[in-house]
Image (cartoon, rainbow, N blue to C red; front, side):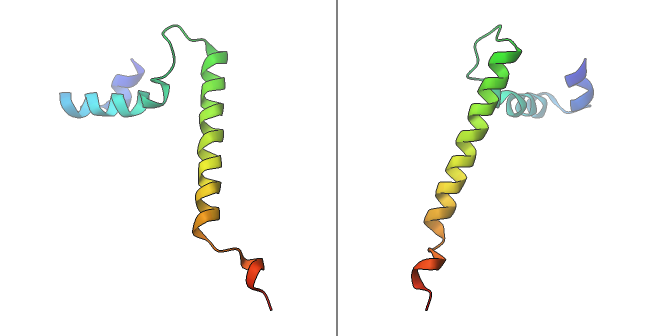
Amino acid sequence: MYQSSLLGDAPGPRRAAMQTEEADHLAELSDGAGCTEIWEHLSERREAEEAAAEDEAATESPDATAHQD
């Protein structure tokens, strides 16, 4: 099994936590979702994260062109 080899000999609670972390990004998908649904979900999530990072960067750094002499 792929996950077993990936997780190696991790103890029970640690193994469960690692499996949860690996699957969190798929938690919103319904059971039986196909490749297309998964691809769309991951693309939408990535776009939302990129937009949030851009918004955060814009609010954290002052506009350099506003105070040029």
